[in-house]
Amino acid sequence: MGALSKSAGSFIIDHPQDPYNKYLFHSFVESPDMKNIYDGNVVTDNLGNATVQLPDYFESLNIEFRYQLTVIGQFAQAIISEEISENTFKIKTDKPNVKVSWQVTGVRNDTYAKDKRIIPEVYKEPAMKGRLFYKPE
Image (cartoon, rainbow, N blue to C red; front, side, top):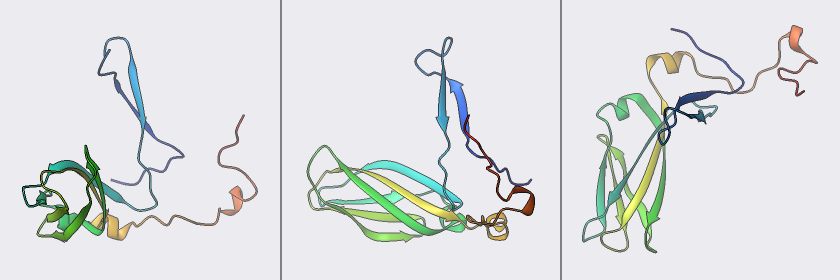
């Protein structure tokens, strides 16, 4: 298996609300890093605590974790109270029973990714210097 390089990317699926008559187009999430994205929702307990379980392979596959939290339905504060360890992390809110939407990203750390890191900025080869990869019409 190799790498695919492209200027943009999208996928097409049958539209979920009218699958026999419409398509739905979405674009890929793009980054200079080889990122994996995980997300979900959790409700904190009566003490404002919640534990998020990630897939068993999470720490084997990922490094350089990033966290995002959004409180839903009320004004409350939410923090990552314990960072990822043993494929779980903990959230703490200043109120009980708070719904929190979370997202964690990690940079791939598998053998292929370590061997084939993307170099985001490179000089054009001589044949392409002075030319545009994509020229608008």
